Length: 111
Image 1 (cartoon, rainbow, N blue to C red):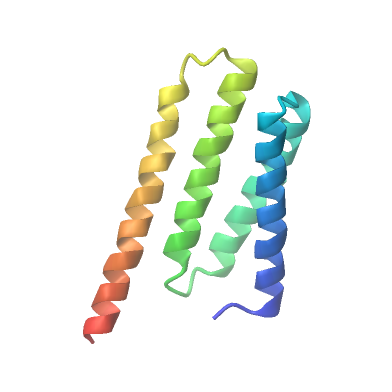
Image 2: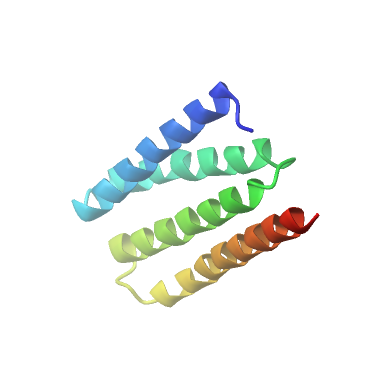
């Protein structure tokens, strides 16, 4: 169960994520690049703080989604889209963690 402090971090994280994606949409390159850093760091912090509970898998999936999303944004902003397909790696890792989460939930339900 998440504490009130963790819920605040998650709320700030959502705001940062939306701000990053808004910068991407509006093509505010440098602001998007700057906001990307705390967005990823907060996601990593949430993973670390939830490492003892099953929700860590969902938080890992979110972390990898943001990494993939941020990589894609940076490629579009600064590298002319040449290696955009590499974003598939962290996206795939996100799916792996979601599958692990559901497998753990199913195993827990069977007990």
